[in-house]
Length: 518
Ligand SMILES: Nc1ncnc2c1ncn2[C@@H]1O[C@H](COP(=O)(O)OP(=O)(O)O)[C@@H](O)[C@H]1O
Ligand SMILES: [Mg+2]
Ligand SMILES: [Zn+2]
Image (cartoon, rainbow, N blue to C red; front, side):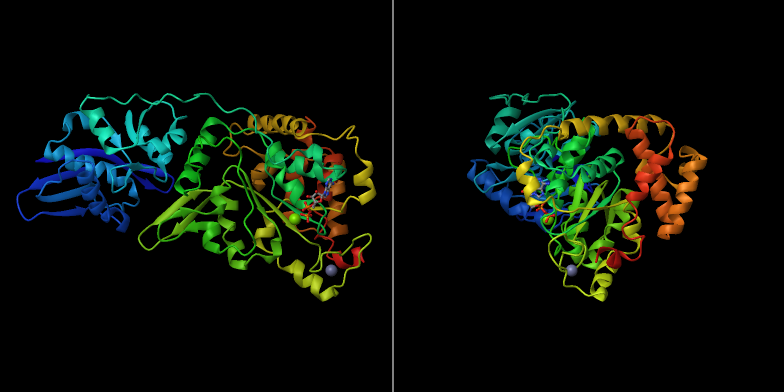
């Protein structure tokens, strides 16, 4: 007596098809699961035995061998309970093996036969669908998450008896069709609108430039200047995600176990702001049961690192690969796992340890040595990946109070429209290249797409001398100038664009920040 049941197994953020082969043979009653099950899968034996008996089914007194095929890849997670239970029932004739073979199954069992939601349901559903599965029986608690998926029928169930009644035709479950089936619209602005921010026109402009090409940006300013307030509003001016991007983000949250139980597809760009005490593992992902970390939870969105110099050096080093490659590879004992991590990095810091260097009314109490020490923490390869440095000064209290009529404050919707236009220009320009945005320009591509006129070259040369810029800064300035030109719908980069871009690369280049702010 033998049966085959289909399910899946998570690999990174993808899923492979797994066949559960179940064999019943005479002998001492016992259950063996082979095919590299981890501890959570091996524990399925007990859950399944008790769940089947409590639900009123037989648990065969036979030698039961379960093989999870392909046998050479690791199987993790509790979603194997239901397919293994189906395997046992099909092998013992309690359900029709023929009927069961038309479906794939995922679900965790409770001891009373209830079917609990599982982590990574949408990743499993996408992986199975892409490999030919047309019908999926899954926990009712996962139906919202999977409902937006096209080209697969889903059958949500709450109890093992419901599955049996469905397969026997006695009481069929209707395929779930609560799916809206359309691409998401714009980003809802739950995190506040830029119209809430008084003044700060320069910073808003800088953030718009950053958003227009996903340039990484560092904001420097004293406590209360509005750094956090403005960073939070950034996802609201980024272009809406495509359907495929929404699926990708939902998959990552699902695998990380971070989807709200009745939450459907995630359509908002993520905004992640881990505390500076975060461990390198929590930032990168990994662990014995691999989970995406904060860099992957911020995929297609914003990773906001407040108090940037306070992060452990090891934690910041984790960011290098994602900022270069848009993904992160984590070495594990048995194999490596790769998660996507295409992020826009937004960092914030005080100008000095006490926070008030350069403040108009409060006095800084730090020594020059302390300030330089503090600034030196953010030098190096990571700093090279940050295209923009923007200084923020608090809007004076009188001004905040006086500015009650926001007569010409730009709101997030207006800002986003401009950003979207600039992104479209870039996508068109780079349609033949491997990149989509200016922030991804490499030196050869800068040569090709960012020619400078005489005046621009002159200005850049002057900046090099005045601010002692590095070659890296020079490249950043040209990339930024390209973005600034695109925001203004200009084909050619002009000296004005270069001048604005230099402004975003001056803070550290001056080399005498301390003197300049005393
Ligand atoms: N330009 C501004 N317009 C309106 N409110 C502001 C502005 N700047 C600061 N605030 C107020 O001050 C609070 C503190 O700002 P926050 O963003 O936390 O500062 P930071 O992160 O720089 O320390 C904000 O929550 C907001 O209420
Ligand atoms: Mg803050
Ligand atoms: Zn200070």
